[in-house]
Length: 501
Image (tube, rainbow, N blue to C red; front, top):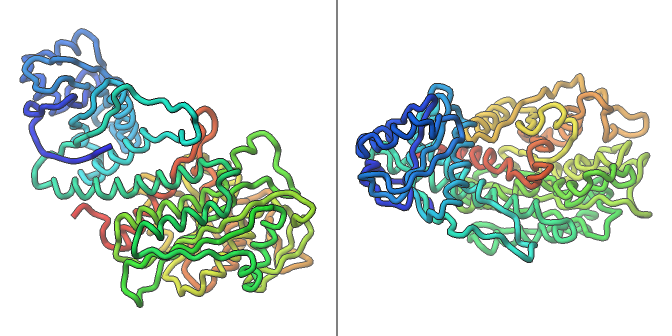
């Protein structure tokens, strides 16, 4: 799909389709009014007859509108004008793109980017429109023998901006959106891949692809032998029951000064999580291929970063592993020695993500990081607390937490901060080791973060629990591509390129 921006009057557009908004009740947007005037009331007459009320998501495709150069006009219901918010705007764009894809229009000029969304500028509206369009057009069919193709798919869409002065801002928004969408697609493709294909070695291969595609990206792989030499006993224990070797992929992006401290992103990469000896219930276990959603998100963010060529240094870590039951698997009751030297009593082998992450978080100390953010489908408790709408955010560093929350609001990839008080640390006490890997039923998301915090004392750190946001279940099952948008926005902000200037 090709995206661009232009500034022009609707009556001068010669295109396969022109897209304009209609508000409730049957109120034409400014652009639609212009078209109505040129067509001598053709559009308003149709609305008076009840063809379109203007409710959010309603669509009416018109052919050969009098005096209009475009072949088609698509009227899009936008709801009540004063109630048009960010969520509704994205939904309208997604439905518009899907409708256009079914009409046979191979190109379109869209004026929905001129709609007023409270508190949002043209940069945000164009970028969100492109991201929503790409998200709506995504499908994972690489393993299907028969692929469904639209009869004449939409190939080009132009978003209109009010004035020529705003063209550079719109162009910057398109550039950012396309890079972020590439990262999101990478995340989705890897996460949706079945676990018999996507194992730790496959994650390492994807990391190597970035090295091959970008001159300032280098990738190194840490194997089990090296992990053993490093003393990563916790990480190694989790993968012991699997025939697939645990591999940690280190992706280094050099875009900033040589002496600038890097930002580090660490992704949990459990390519399949059976629960181990503490076996999960069978229903829905197929979705445990998504337990590498954190690693997929980090890989996607690194792809977007490399595409944008931001002037900062960033290291992405994919902590690849598989948690399987076998005669060699680790057990409840085992006591593990982590890379940090701290010991952990295993109460449940299904609380494995934190055991992999803790050693990865100790490993990244060597990079002298400016900040570390780990991303993980860590706890079912986070799904209970926040559902599928918000990523859980916990941090020991208030400024970093605020940066991430700000990035989440800017990108529309929302997060919500939970407390990380010392009061919760008591739930991890063990009579036999330094602490346990499970804090009980209460505050599961918080106690999991408390566990990780024990390994992050030497740098500023934040934890993103994406258990509820990384994938969808049910009929439309699949990766959401989150939190690539939030992480890339955070990196844009850090590099001073967050605005369309």
